[in-house]
Length: 256
Image (cartoon, rainbow, N blue to C red; front, side):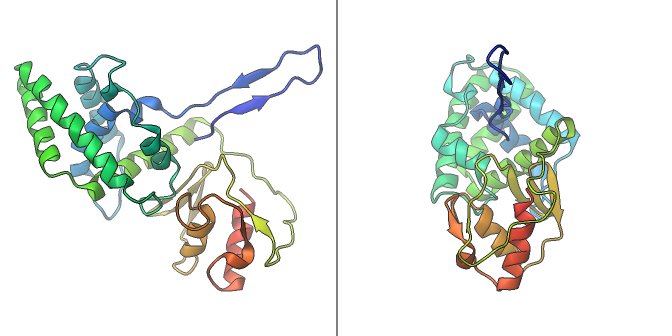
């Protein structure tokens, strides 16, 4: 998601305005991720990874139910530590994460599940008891891969939801693109909103569909935050793949 849009005063006697556009915070608190882990996991197949409005509504209701057992400032109702949440929100996909992050997130949420389950059982409510049993099962046998799949499915849904109500980012180059040489230096834009999904690449409010298998490593290298170029400056000559295909992919990305 964009971090913010700066509006500068046109002259010294005019006021300026800074509008911040934030990530939907409530979707990424520990309690929300626990709700997603419970509700979304059985609804998402590893083949398609798509969520429906109905599933997301059920997840929201479950989140409201579990979050009320903690105070707003309790850790369970706060976003995960920056070392976990930022990579999860910026990574290109599940394979573009720092080593050990999936395990660290799973352990963290499993601990919250252990803390939450007794609180739910104390209420004596039948539905709360059922949720507590699910939390016990998740904390006993946490599956980092399944949890990551849930997180990225939710992230994709939120991405699409965001751009249904907000305009896509303005394209950078409408006309002639700059000439590309092997020595040309490139870098992923700091505010790029990118995610690889089963249907293609989601990028700044646009969808690049039907990416060919040979082109995929090139997209990964250019847009990776923790793999490939890892968000750093790189040269065209460093991108893996046939030069013709590399040039074609880079020309696509330069427009965004």
